[in-house]
Image 1 (tube, rainbow, N blue to C red):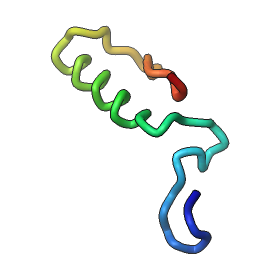
Image 2 (image 1 turned 90 degrees about the vertical axis):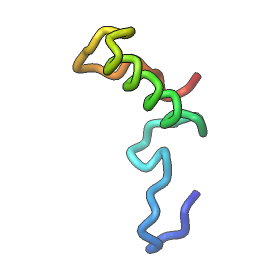
Image 3 (image 1 turned 180 degrees about the vertical axis):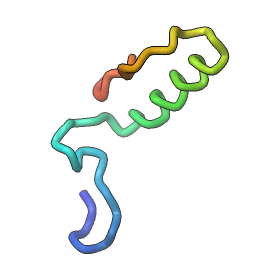
Image 4 (image 1 turned 90 degrees about the horizontal axis):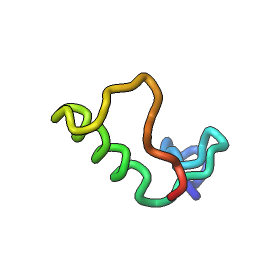
Length: 50
């Protein structure tokens, strides 16, 4: 939860519930894609909730 008017966006701002480590997992998958350890796709392979 972020205070209104603070300019800080919450993880679930768009209505999608996300776990607190979502962006860490997303970044990890992006790194694996760059190293060609994971297929490059237009869709996110990381689910918002683990």
